[in-house]
Length: 202
Length: 256
Image 1 (cartoon, rainbow over the protein chains, first blue to last red):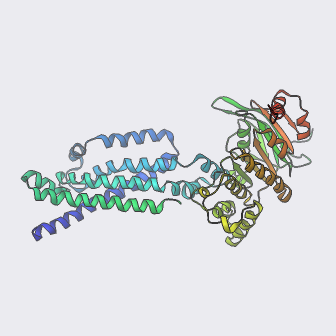
Image 2 (image 1 turned 90 degrees about the vertical axis):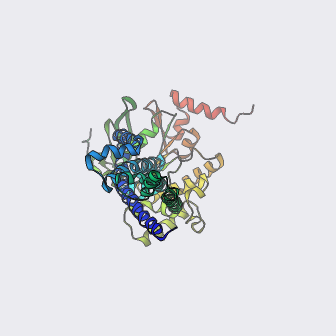
Image 3 (image 1 turned 120 degrees about the vertical axis):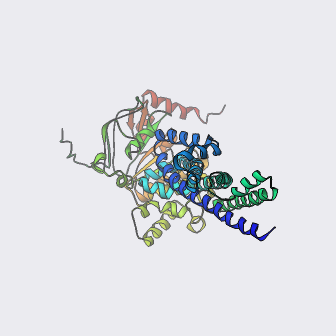
C-alpha cells in the first residue's frame, strides 16, 4: 500500500466521521426533545412517526437525488438526507423508552407529588436511557454505512473510494473504502453498546 | 342547617356528592363520605365497583365530574395539586417503587421533594426503616428488584409515610401478597395505626381485610355507596352487597 493511499484513507475517514458526527448530533438534537414532546401527545405521535417512517423508506440514493435540485451538491445536502434517516431510530427508541416506564411507577410518582418536570427528569428519562442509547446506536451504525453514498453528491467521506473503485473496477479502492467504514461501524456499535450497559439503571 | 363553610368539626377529608364519569360511563354516583382524623375508612367493593376510582379522585389522579372534595378544610380546587399530594401518602398494589433508585432513595422521596436538609432526610429515612420493620443496614442500598413482594410493600408504606402526611391512601396494597405475608403486613398496619395514629383511606375487595383494618367500612356497589358501617354493624348488615360479602366469610374454611 503506498503512503498516499494511507494518507487518503485517514483524511477520508476523518471526513466520514465528521459527516456522521454532525448528522447524529443534529438528529439527536431534534429527535430527543421531539420524543419528549410526543410522549405527552398521542395525537401528534402518529403523524410524526408516519413522516419519519416514510422518510426511512425512500431509498437513500433517490433521496439525495430529490434534494439535489433544491439545495445543490455537497456536504449540507448529504447531512440533511442522513439526518432524515437517523431521526426515526432515535425518535422511536426514545419514545418507546419513555412510554415503556411502568404505569404504576409513573402513577405513584404523580401521586407522591412530583411535578411533570421532575417525573420526566428523575423517572422517565433515566429509565429510558438504555432505549435512547440503543436508538443512537442504530442511528450511528446505519449512518456510517449510508454516508458512503454521500460521495455521489460530492460530500466526500469513505464513499469516494467506493465511487472510484466501482468506476475503475479497482478492488484496492473498494477495500480502502469498505474496510474502514466497516471497522468504524463495528467500533461505534461496540462502544455504544458498552455505554448502554454502563448507563442502564441497576 | 349550618353554613357550608363553618362546619363545627373540621374533618380531614370530605367527599360531597361526588360523581365521576369516564368516557361517558358513570363510575361514581353521588358519593358522600367524611373521614375523621385517626380513623381508617375501608372502601370495600367488587372489581369495577368504583372503589379505586374514588380513591384516585381524592388525590386528583382522576377528576370528578361533579361534587366536591375537601381536604383539611379546603376544597381540592383551592389546593395546588402537587402540594396537596405531598400531604397524602399513596400506596398501590405493586408498590410502584422507582426501579432505578435504592430503597433509601425511594423512602426519602417526598422529604427530598419538600427540600428537607439532607441530614434530616437521612434521619427520617432511618426512622422509617424501623417503623416498617426493615433493618436499614441490610436494605438501605438494595434496589426494588432485590426485594420480596412483602419487603417492597413495606418500602412502599415507608415511602408513603415519608414526610409524615396527614392522610394515607392505600389501593389494595396487600392484594398480590401470599396470605402469610399479607397477614403479617395487616398486623403491622394495625400496629402502625397505634404508633403513628394516621388517618387512612384503604381500598380492598377482601372483606376479612376490611373487618380487620377498618374503623369504618364504606361498601360500594356499581359506583354508589350502599352502606357505611363499623365492622360490628357490618357483620349484621342486611343490604344485598353486604350479605354477599358476608356469605364468603361463612363458606370459607368449612370442611368438605
